Image (cartoon, rainbow, N blue to C red; front, side, top):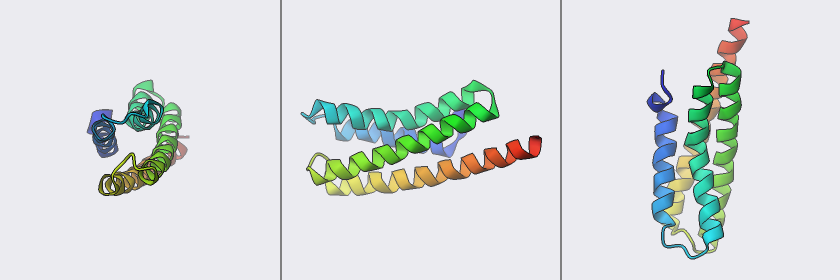
Length: 119
């Protein structure tokens, strides 16, 4: 299986694209850079883990992607509170980060269980 086949990678890639579009006109460049980097980190770490070739590395990078998802959700909440991200857009993004986080947790568990059986 390629990382491009994973639903969680597809979903997190779409979210990253939406964040770039939603913050395109934002004048707070530091916030825009931070939130887009967090969003970009999720599918990037999924891909990197899958390309590493070892199950242990794959799991490690999935954990990094999951952590980035939590970081991103926090930034979306803050962006909404300060008026950088419209409420309707931020609610959808928050829901997406929750779903992605659950998908990553499930994928991590599956890969860890497989690793235990292989030993």
